[in-house]
Every structure is written in C-alpha cells, then in structure tokens.
Amino acid sequence: MSWPALYAQLVGANRHSTSLGKIWLSVLFIFRVMVLMVAAETVWGDEQSDFVCNTLQPGCENVCYDQFFPVSHIRLWCLQLVFVAAPTLLVSMYVAYRNHGDKKKLLQISSRTGFLSSKSPEEELEALKRRRLPITGPLWWTYFISVVAKLLIEVGFMYALYVVYDGFQMPRLVQCDQWPCPNLVDCFISRPTEKTIFTVFMATASSICMVLNGAELAYLVTKAITRSLSRKDGRPTSREKTWRGTNERSPGSLRRCN
Amino acid sequence: MPLTPPAEPDPEPKMNWASFYAVISGVNRHSTGIGRIWLSVLFIFRILVLVVAAESVWGDEKSGFTCNTQQPGCNSVCYDHFFPISHIRLWALQLILVSTPALLVAMHVAHRRHVDKRIYKLSGRTNPKDLEQIKSQKMKITGALWWTYVISLFFRVIFEVTFMYLFYMIYPGYKMIRLVKCDSYPCPNTVDCFVSRPTEKTVFTVFMLAVSGVCILLNIAEVVFLVGKACSKHLHDAGDTSMGAWIQQKLRLL
Image 1 (tube, each protein chain N blue to C red):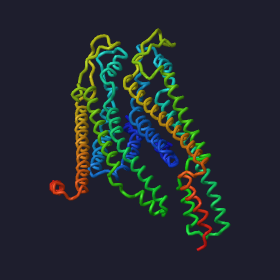
Image 2: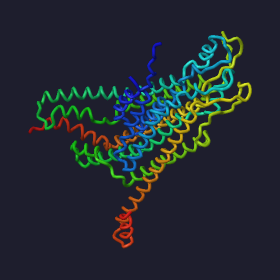
Image 3: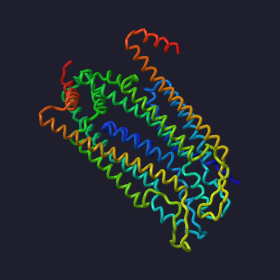
Image 4: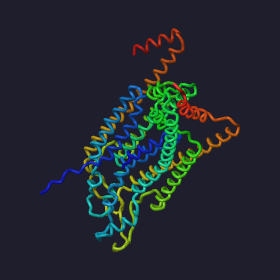
C-alpha cells in the first residue's frame, strides 16, 4: 500500500464530504503528501550519514544522532498523514454499512413484489451505490466525529514535533557528551537551513488543514441548527425534498405495474 | 571483480508526479487551447526534465561538495551556508504551486455542475442520461468561470515570477560557481570549497529559467486571448452599432 493507493481510498470517501472536506483532501495530497514525497524525503535522505561529530571515537556519532533525533521528521510526518487520513475511512465504513442495509431491503422488496419495475434490480443497485447520501442523522454524527478526530490528531502531532525538536528550527551545531564521546563534542547537522524551510512549510500546510477542519465543523453545526429550526417550523428543507423525491421513487417504481 | 548493477532510481517520486499529472490534466478539458499547450510544456519540458535529468545532476550535490580541510563539520556548515535550499526542491515547489491555481478552475466547474444537477432535479428532469450529459459537457468559459480562470492565470504568473526572483536572490546571476570561500565555525580559517558539476548545473538552471519564461509568456497570451474574446463578445451583444461592427471586423482580420 502506498500513497497513491491511500489517495484512491480517500477519493472514494470524498463523494460524501462537504466542499470544505474536498478542499481539505486536495490540500492534504498536493501540499503535504506530494511535497513530502518529491522534496522532503531527499532533504532528510542523508540525515544520519552526514551527521558528523568532531571526534574519531567510534560510536560517538551514532549515540549523539540518536540523542538529538529520537524520531526523524519524515517518519513523524508520514505517521501524521496516515493517522489524519484514517478518520475519513470511518465515514466510508458507515456509508458502506448503510448501502449494505439498503441493498438488503431493496432485494427483500423486489423478491416480495416480483420484478415489475421499469428499472432492473441491477440498475437499482447501481443507483444505490452511486447515490450521494445527505449528511444528516447518524452520518452527520460520524462525519462530525471524524473531523474532530482529524483536528485533534493534527494538533497532537504538531505539538509532538514542537516538543521533540524544541521548536521548528533545525540548529547547525549540537553539543553532545554522551558516552562514548570523550568530552563535549561538536556535532554538525546536514542541510539545517533546508530542513528548517521544509519544517516551516509542512507546519503551515498543517495549520491550513486545521483551519479547514475548524471551518468544516462550524459549517456542519450551522447546517444542523438551521435544519432543526426549519423542521420545527414544519417546513422540510430543500435537501430533504430532493432526497425524499429520489428515495421514494425507487420502492415506488417497483410497485408500478407495466 | 563482480559488477554491481546501477542503483535503480526510486520509482516513488515518479509515481507521484504521475498521479499529480492525472489530477492536473483533468482540468485540461476546461482550458483554452493555449492552456493545453501550457500544460504540455509544463509536463514535458519542466517536470519530465526535472525527474529524468536534473535530479541526477544535483544528486551528489552534498557528497560531491568538498572543502580543502579535514576539520569535521566544516563541509556541512559551508554547504549549508552557500546552499540554503537546493535548486531541485525550489523547482519542485515552484511546479506544485504553479499547477495548483488550475484546481481553482476545477473546483468552480464542479460547483457549477452540482448547481446544474440540482436545477435539473428540481425541474423534474431526473433522466440519468441528462445527468451524465452534465458531467461530460464542456463548460464555456463565461461569467464567473471566466473570472476564476483569469484569476488563476494571474496567480500562476505571480508564482512563476516570485520563484524566479527567489532563485535570483539565492543564487545571484543564475550561475553556479566552481569555488566558494568559507570561514564559518568550525572551519579553522578561510577554506576553499568546491562545488560538484557547476557547468552542468548552470546549463540546467538556464534551461529551466528559459522554459519558465516561455510558460509566463503563454499565460500572458492566454489572458490577452480571454480578454479579447470577452471584449468581442460584448461588442457583438452590444448591438450592431457602426463602431461595434468596425471593431469586430478589425478583430476578425487579426
């Protein structure tokens, strides 16, 4: 499984997202995954081989590298991207579960009433697969929880990166006196400026994603409130009108005699 | 002595530029003719050249950077001082940023299609063939889409020019020098440091700069074409005034 495979999975779930969710997915893949793959990985490629300490003592470089870089930036970002993409799969799982339930109902109805519809059952099942579910009811809650989870994961990883590396800047020189280094030795990090530039870039992209997630949460909550207010007035929302229209047609068409 | 096969280039980056191409070329359907030429120039003369040639030229930029000293750490520090960010990374970022305004257009087209679909549904036309037709029809670049398209072109030009300026600031004159002199700690004194493959790097830098210039010209030509098309459409709609007819005739001759 690689990044393109993950992209294929997420694009499938994208159909049931809000517009902000679709923008979030594009920002994630273009400004984070792509940049990570085509640029950042080469910058960090020689991080250990080019980590040089001012000593000939064997083992000193290894020990000092391990002390200052417990987890590499690249690995942290890969983990962050994988974890951040995971809640979207919650939504696809719920949609698959819903579709499975509706498919069973459809098959039950068609077996009871016989194939008297103008549309064949295969077409009905295809339409079921291709329909876009409105974000209401349990799907709204699943979607809301997934966006909250994404936001918390982003914040968690940004905080972890900040704490482990004491900020987003990569120093040129670190001083190390771990055994077996004979005394306080200077160790030099390779490409610190380029690493700082990419760390700041990825932190910015992460912040943009967090802002998009926050905006999506606000949008979902506002939509839910307006929907419940208009329902209190007894008026169905325009979404419900079109959805009811689409969904009621399917079992109705089965009852029609040719 | 056994011969070792050459190291296989990592297929992952190519796969990602390929998936990037798939995403961006989807926008192609709604572009003008000049837009399609721009996209081809971008992918053939910039991304392909970057992946196939430039990355191997800059591949040994750090390992081949040698300073005239044995002081550990001097190499790293001098390299970092003279090359804050590598050309390859700057070009990769430039190509990504320059291609993304096209996605603005794609989003606008998707939004328009969504609105058309809802209008169709509300007016009762729910024939799946009609809905499929909405998906496959080519959007005309008029109205709000025209503005989105022109704004995306402006952003492309701004990003291109910004990166060209950044290149000029970081690497003055776009030339790669053979020798740099460095005296940062821990280098014991002013040491000579030698850059690997400076001439080849200069050749590729100038090539990428030239293609970048061509892309800017294509974008400007596209803006002029769209503005001209919009003006001629307005003149046409403004009725058959003698002035309007005269300007139309002149435009047709061009």
